[in-house]
Structure formats: structure tokens, C-alpha cells
Image (cartoon, rainbow, N blue to C red; front, side):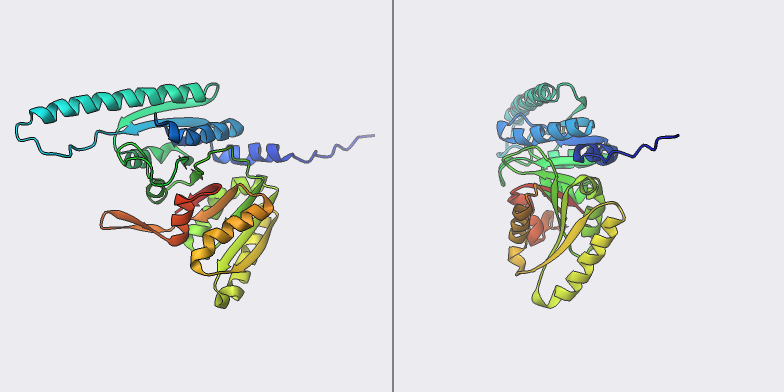
Length: 295
């Protein structure tokens, strides 16, 4: 008589390995010799290790322009030679730091003398996920540090924002910041591998009083759609003014022990500068936990 073998339910870690590891085969992160940016690399290494992914470390910085004019050109030449040597030295230190931290992983290293935001956005063409952030807001020069918001809007890749304190992403509980927009739909799709492995998923719409019915309809549809991808999510609608949206998202995350918020990244370029929506700005500049942004 034949014995019927039942499938053993997968553990959460096995789910993560079978979903996220297939989706995120290549993770890219900027590596700097600045100690204050170390949390980003540490988080990227931990994530790549848990997903058995290839981690691309990118050392990217450039010589800033001279602040003063030099009519003879002699001082300018000497200054550029000295600064280029500093950049080369910084990139070599970054490479060594990366190799030390990523020991045992599948890795690749790319060094480029370019503005970090521009260089990393271009180099992300072969990546599935960019790990950014991991430093205090407003710190770092544009010639040495990548702007997380610019990467979100320019790269065409999901960007995982690491909080300044760093940490290891577990994504056992996740909050999805829902709005009925293209960016939110893109973020939901990009985050699906993490959602499939999560134990708790909350789909939250923070809206005005006159938008409650539409928000309830929208979040219910999202939950139903996620169920067809084996994600057991629940919907929630909270009424609050626009300036409190990020706060409400973090309150909801705290309530379920979520270390990840998934959100659409809203912004555009204006007169050479990037302008972000209020919620995106708050999540970018004051992340209290990991944030997955898509544009």
C-alpha cells in the first residue's frame, strides 16, 4: 500500500530563500571609506548573505571643482593632481573595506571617478536592487556621497533605504503605504518577494476624511490581489492630515513590529534640483526603519 507524503510547510526563512532570492540575484550598493556610511554596507552584506545574492560594491567619487580661480593654471594643475590622488586613495580604501566585510559572498567591485549619484544610477542597469542610505540626513558631499532620492528617481530600480543606525533586514512584518498611483503599484510589485515571505503584511492608506470610502475600496482590492500571490495581508485606513502620513506609517509599523515600509517614491526634477513629495521626503531623510522605494 502506497504511503502518501504530505508537503512540509515552509518556514519563513525558506520562503524568503525561495521568493526573494530568485527575484534579487544582484544587489548593488555604494561603498565609501567614510566610517559614518558603514551601516549601509553592513546591511547590504547581511541581505546578500541571507538571499545568497551577488553583491556589487561600487566605489564612486570625483574631484570637486576648485573654489577659486587660478589665472596661471599652475596652482590648479597641482591641486587637481593632489585631489585625484586623494580620490584614488579613498577608492582603494573603500575597495578593501568592501572585500573585508563581504568575505565569503559572491561579489564584484567597480570603481569609477564620477559623481556618485550619476555613476551608480548608470551602473545599476545590471542590478535587481540598490541598497542606499545608511547615514545621517544631510551628511556627505555630492562628490563623495550618493543621493538616495536621486537614485530612486533615476535608476529605474527598487531602492532599499537603510536607516542611519543600520541593522539587518528581516521583513517578518511589513507595512505597505498605499495610494492609488503608478508609483505605489510599482512598489507593491517590486516588494512582492518580501511580502510573500512575511508573516504579517498591513496595507495602509492614510487619507483625508472625504477619501475614506475610496481608500477602503482600494486597500481591499490590494489585499485581494496579494492573496492571489499567497500573501496574507490585511487592510487599514487611517484619517490624518498630509503632514502626518509618514508618522502614521511608522506608528503602524511599530504596532506590528515591522522593520520595513514599502512605498512609492514621488518626485521630479525642477531647475536642476530634485523636488520630492512630503511623504517621500520624510521617508528618505528621516527613515526610522528600512524603506523600500520605487518610482
